[in-house]
Amino acid sequence: MTARDRLIVALDLSSVEAAQALVTRCGDAVSFYKIGYQLGFAGGLSFARKLIGEGKQVFLDFKLHDIGNTIEKGTESIAKLGATFLTVHAYPQTMKAAVAGRRGSSLKILAVTVLTSYDDNDLATAGYRGTVTDLVATRARQAADAGIDGIVCSAEEAAALRRIVSPSMALVTPGIRPAGAATGDQKRIMTPAKAIAAGADYLVVGRPITEAADPKTAAEAIVAEIATAKS
Ligand code: C5P
Image: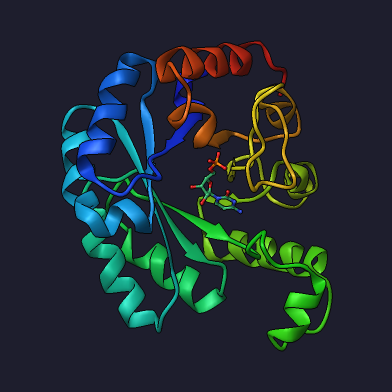
């Protein structure tokens, strides 16, 4: 895998026109894009198909969670789009159903353990006992048992998760900020080089590229930093 393939640019934009403009500006500097609810429900699925047709990889960040049958059939449909990654919440039934639904396709399933907007108090309010750290570890083990392909985690969690799951499981980390970049609403951030050193396989980067005066140059700088980082 090249350094460029490790960079995933989050297309957090509300129209296909805006997404297309960004993709055009990034050109060959970016090979992998993430589409979430915002663009996905604004024509983003057709746009995903177009990107895939042009040789880009697509990560559909839809964080699915439902009964097994619905997840399995939904994942089968998503697999036909030709996307590379799909997120589901890390509940055992959901993960097993998604793995069954992606069988025979090149789609890989990523599990979201505990949303990073949750702290221990939020978990208690939602009816869980125990800490975020414990639940992340439990769900990572359950993801491995379910045959999940990778985990979305903060770069801070990456080193601990690397010890829990096998090297074949991809760790995909958002909250990445090159030195000197605006943090925005992200609280726990890491530079690209530090995240790779902590064990991340893929870095999800949004605003440092999408809001840059020159997105292509910003992307190239991150790819160069990934290339020199030691994992
Ligand atoms: O603009 P920024 O680089 O902060 O974007 C990060 C992307 O990663 C966004 O699409 C955000 O929804 C996503 N993400 C995140 N934290 C998580 C999971 C996903 O920031 N824990």
